Length: 206
Length: 206
Image 1 (cartoon, rainbow over the protein chains, first blue to last red):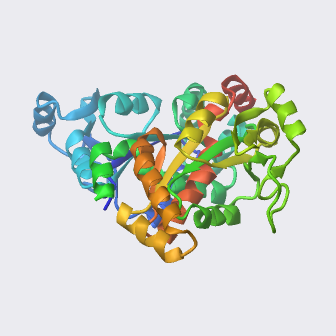
Image 2 (tube, chains in turn red, green):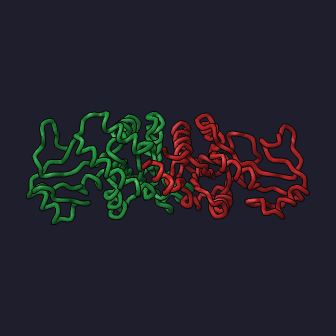
Image 3 (tube, rainbow over the protein chains, first blue to last red):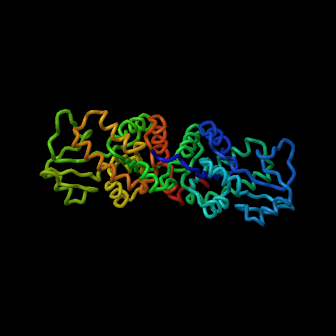
């Protein structure tokens, strides 16, 4: 019999306001064995934030020890606090055959592709146009105009990189976009490159 | 606004008895704008065979004219009759933005990949094991033992090439396998490589 499916990586990028979180909820309804990559930080948890949900909250000493052990995919120091992506939980999830999901920007996409020796499927999610993005950011009324301006500027820069991704989802119709993302998540682990050729053939023949 | 999706190619290969036709029916339920590539032949239609459904039936003169016009993706002469894959209907379907589906063997897969300048997604479909394939071929009771033996021999040879494909579907559970194939068919036309980068970016920004 043919071997079980292995772990693989799914990267999502796209401007804030493109609907990534809403679409991801549909993926979680359909797939149970996933691991959503969360960041590790030395900053204090804010009200309502949970360790292992919003961030892994660690001490400065723990973070610096992990830096020395080369245990970060990437990290940065912002205003005296460290932020980074720990490799341990990612590698653990991959070993368990899970789908590891990253919600990262275009630079993060490049780092994951280059630094992790796993099969990666990547998706760039966007709105039908910049105008629609602006409308959505204004309508959700959660960000200051400064923040919205910054998000728009980032979005303009990031769209240039869409073709470095495998798939483009235009979130015009939520139902269609969700179906597309769920489909991508479902088939990421049946890529032939994930299988050990000789093992599969010998198992299949016997 | 971002442009419409373009046509793309979906190739299915796998041993006779792997369940391709049953799985394809599920794809047809979900997708309407597809074109299933059928062969052109000079042999006479058998009882029940329809022109444009089972084959394109043409005269020897028509076939040879198309050969001269370089209008075949591939062709062969078997027992005085020609069989081939005409390029015209394929190119027409691609221009119309359709998903062009091929059910072909591993050699055909290589030809389509190399000769057609389109985005190709390919799927190798198989049973969980050779033993299961043998059981299925025997159980369906439609082929002589000679034919079954030939199919088994072909299957052993073809499985060696599964890793030249993008995806491997192991048809163990029909529902899961169908879901996987429908998903692949659905997302084949959102590959970023199908979009013209400059056009998309300029449309998105304006």
